[in-house]
Length: 504
Image (cartoon, rainbow, N blue to C red; front, top):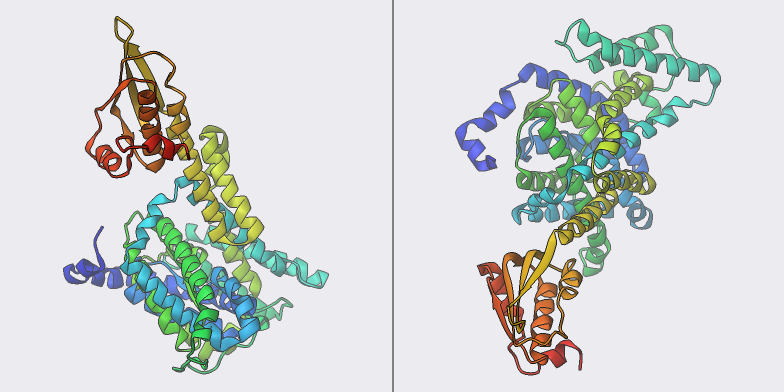
């Protein structure tokens, strides 16, 4: 994987900006239009003015395009971070939210410098699939309020426009792929709504758009330890959830585009983006899988697509807000339904019968946890935890001990094979007969590996129990790593060790 610094020096960074200018700008337009209602909705979730989310989406997208680790991925204000700020805003107000955003950025930069982006290697494919499926369902569910207007005539009109929008999105590429079909959907449905004066909800009904550029400001909070203790828990939660969703999205975009990215640089980039956003009156955000997929499917591949989306968002809301307000919500709903359909892993349904049961349980547990809590981070945590438990259980079963007695029956050799760790300790202990009258016992671990303090303690106990019965014990065949661990933690050669292990 090429580092950020190497890309700067070898020309790859410039290619990431200008290798797909037309496709990136066109896809940026689509993403910018789709960002507006979402940014407003996320602001409402957090309990702040719509301009807070709109300014944040502009700032985060533009900054992450420059310093992020994944070209073509869209970052902005998101529901995942907005829901974490509800109580903070309610109890302490907007200024504390801005300070939390700055602190969360610092924490994320620190995580990147500590190279915590590599933790993604511990997220299994089943968890990824569950994450994607849950997100697809949440995206679709978020559109349901728009599909249920108050009066019957608007309802059927809304359904007709959404159906028409989906038809354009899926059929227009058969005519030409030069223009992204979601952009055509927005233009056509907006023209119809304005020309015929159709009675459907529009972007303007979501909330008032800002009419001025953002300005630099310092959060108006007391600079005390008490303030730090108030915002620190929220900042840690926002930083953790933001990085988790960003890194998951980055992995998905890597696969969609068949490219690699720098996950530690993405942590740093997300942190810088949030840090700067807090100083211009914006809320914290992270990568958005829905908008990232819209970008990729609309032809966006480079950093210019992300930058264009952020810059065009600001232009749209500040300078041509009167036009943007007229965009009918059914057009954006159609785009988001397309995203949910494209995001869901339909093959995972068929694979429920074909894949190992443990993998299917992990996937379903991730989906149901996310849907129940509406928190992607909790769902991923449950999935990773279950994956670890199932993996440990499986490895513990790939373990056996066989023994062979000497001709006179006074000596016995135990051959240990497999991984000796906390989950296999019980089987290890049950494999020895301490009551057999033996002069010598040899424990051969040449085909085993000793992993943790639980296995070292079990080994100590076996050696000491045989010695208590009068047998001489030889421990042979340890590899270097196992020997180092046993030498450091083992106590079977110390006086009174058995009594200490038995708690006497």
